[in-house]
Length: 218
Image (cartoon, rainbow, N blue to C red):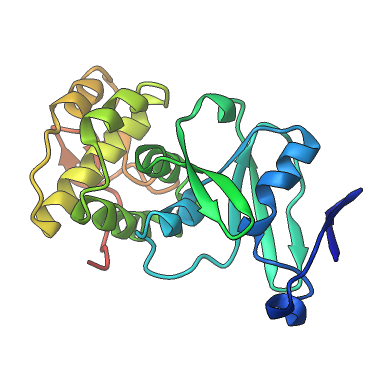
């Protein structure tokens, strides 16, 4: 047995005895229910569940409505991010060896990654994830645009630019008009990389200053 939180205990099957813990997906749902917090598996951990992460994330990324410290148990590290909108984001239920977990739908996964690129390994890696989702037909772009209205307009602009770029590379046709309409409603140009310089080629369609190189691994 090991304790991921005070008063909560999880049995360790024989195959994980050397870990002195079990994978986070085996206990995150029961732990969060025990703590009484909304949550979903997000960012690159969600991308991995959807089959769009080219390599396994080093940490298990969880978005929650509570302020929780990250937790590490030998080989298992859980990284928590706080969002007041956790309970309203669409999720899908995924089976695990011990039950189920809540995982952000592909569209929310993309929007969360674009909104917080540091959690996705940077824009190039996010574009790689996007390529996997588009190539496998897992991303509903009209739904993406609908859900984007609940994020800052800059997220829609950056997402639109990335979807257009990646769709061309993977040879997928998508209807970008709904995202386009959101981007056009914003008067102020947005830098592609929020932390970068404010100079670079200007993309008129997305009202984006392309201030960084994006090189997806597709």
